Each structure stands twice: as structure tokens, then as C-alpha cells.
Amino acid sequence: MIAFWILAPIMVAAALGMVLVRKAVHSAMLLAVVMVSLAILYAVLDAPFLFVVQIIVYTGAVLMLFLFVLMLVGVDSADSLVETIKGQRALGATAALLVGVVLVVVASQAVVGSAAGLAGPNLDGNVQGLADLLFSKYVFAFEVTSALLITAALGAMVLAHRERLTPKPTQRDRAQQRVRDYADSGKHLGPLAPPGVYARHNAVDTPALLPDGSVAGESVSRTLKARGTVRQAPAIARTPGLDDDGSQTGRVTGNDASRPSAETGGDQ
Amino acid sequence: MSSEPFLVLSVLLFTIGALGVLVRRNAIVVFMCVELMLNAANLAFVTFARQHGNLDGQVAAFFVMVVAAAEVVIGLAIIVTIFRTRRSASVDDASLLKY
Image (cartoon, rainbow over all chains, first blue to last red; front, top):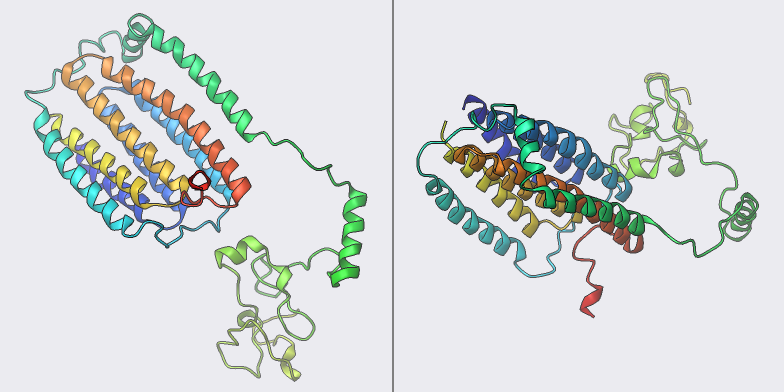
């Protein structure tokens, strides 16, 4: 029971955080906390087989699948804050609160008497007991489960498959397209600029500076920009002619102070 | 060790999951909340298995897990397909059948 009183507040807090937190990745992490805690509660409730299955199937497989899809869908998919149905959030929260009150009242009065305990059924071991039931009383449901799993695998393949409607561009096509872009719009032919290299920072989140001191926009990954974790190049390569906080526009105005100063050790 | 606290916890988790389904827009988060509701139901199953002293509840929880795994596979494939065609993971954007 000690495990329950330690885990229950953690689980409720993590579940609430999962609903309230803005980024989907954080929701997935908080869901992992709930699921692992639930696995421990299964162990407390004399269900060692479900304890293991919960960790392997839910935390291991299902949550990883969620994280893969989050990776595919991308980090810049934030929740829209516009309500399509007016007052839907407030109504939803009220409805959930009412359902919660009703269910808590019912659940707290549902059980009469003390628990019978699983010492008898678990006498030969929990896994053996479950196997006895699965292959006798529930054998039909068990067999139908296999059909369900095959259907799910097929469905995933059908849904994830994409017919190619246009011919695949070859390397020659790409090169020609690049030159055409250069002729039409003057888009740079070569590869993108690498990130900036400074004495104290050479990570991919530091933009490179052009010869006139302005930031080379393409030198930092689009994903990092979407996350908002790009460093301000002027803050690193601080020029003696400017204020201490640099210019927030991301541009170093260049008279003779266009080169990063030796004071911060910038050399590029 | 009585069963009521476990039941109340399971009901709370179920309610929080329902709240998430009702208020969130991101399809993946809505899906995670559905998973939370399934897990809450599983906790109730396991609790009642112990209350009644037989393993049928645990078998039911096991079947729920299997169905949930299949459901996650299909659901996430649908979300990825919708995202591919509409570049959006919001449940409000998938409204073509309305018109």
C-alpha cells in the first residue's frame, strides 16, 4: 500500500501534466511516467505477468511508436489556440469534471467487503494460471486476437503505402533544376553554408556571419529555427563598437566593427 | 489492502484522459489520452481480479492491451496519412466530410 500512496499522486500529476503541457513530446514523456507507475501497481496487485507486459508492450512498443510518429509529424506542430466550436474547452472541462465526480462517487462505494486476494489462483504461478484460462475458457477470443493482429499489420501497410504518381527525379534532373533555379531566381547553386565556427562555439546552432557581418540565414537548420534554439551570432561575436547585449535583429551593423572582436575570442 | 483507492485512482486517470480527448487538438495527444483511458480501465480490471480472487480480470486486461496495440498501429498510420496529405496533425483540420 506504501507503493500506491507514493505512486498515485505522481500518476495523477503526470496525467494532468500530459493534458496541460503544450508540446506533444513532453506529453509522451509524462505518459511514460504514468505507464511505468501503472506497471508497478500491477506488481503490487499480484499481476506479475501484466507488470512485464505493461512495460514491454506499452512503454517499450506503443510509446516508441508515438515518438516515431511525433518525429515524422515534426516538432513545429503546436496546438492551435483558435476554438472551432465556441466555448468547447470550457464545456469539455465541465463535462469531464462532472463525469469525474460521478465516477469517483460510484467507485468509492462499489466495493463491499475485503479483497479475496489472488493467493489461490496464483498458487502454480501467475503465468501458469493465466495460460490455463487463455487456452481453455478464452481460447476463442485468443484465436480471434490473431486475426485482429494480422488485420492491424495489413492495415498499417496499406495506410503507410504510397503510390508514386510522378517519375522519381534522377540526379541529372535535380542538377538541371538547380541550374534552372539559379537562372530564374538567382538561388545559390552550391551547398548550404555551414554553421559558424567561433573560438567558443562551433555547434550547429550558431549561425555563420557573412563578410559584411550579417547573419547567413541558411547556415542554421530549419528545425532548430522552429524550436527557437538558435544562438544570436552577435551575442557570441560581440563587437567593440556595439552595446553589450548586441543588436537583437541578428545583424551586426558594419563600419569598422564588422569583424568579431578578440575580446570574446571570435575568429570567424 | 482495500480495493477502493485503486478504483478511485483508475477513475481519476480515466477522467483526465477524457478531459484530454475533449480539450486537446493535436491528434497525437488526443490519441495518447485515449491510451490513458484504456490503461485506467486496465487498472480497474486488475483491481477487480484481486477483489474477486480469480484471474479473469487479468485476462481481460491482457486482451485490452492486445486491442490497444492494434488500435495504436492503425490510428497512428491514419494520423501519418492525414498529415502527409494535409500537412496538419490537428483534429479540427480533418473536416472534409462536412462539405
